Length: 87
Image 1 (tube, rainbow, N blue to C red):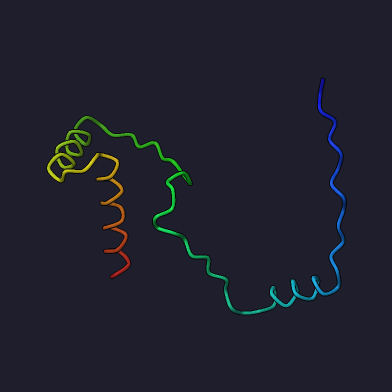
Image 2: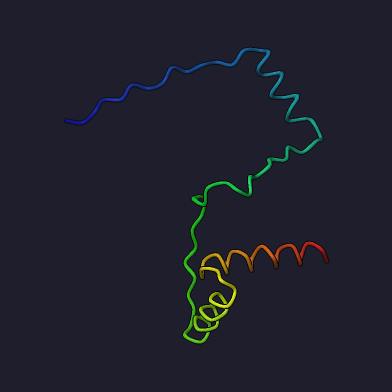
């Protein structure tokens, strides 16, 4: 039997809440959200297609570096991002 859902109560904002929202929307200072670099890695997943040559290069380089393939790719991405930002 399906669960009957009741709509949430429609809450009307108070005039103070409306003013606070409007004041925040009119301000010129951008809101910068900080992102934790040590946060769990469950935000986004990528599927990366590699040909046999690229996979052999990745496998050899990660073995030489003592890293897993995924960690090697992640480290390379972060290193390249820092290099691009410094230019």
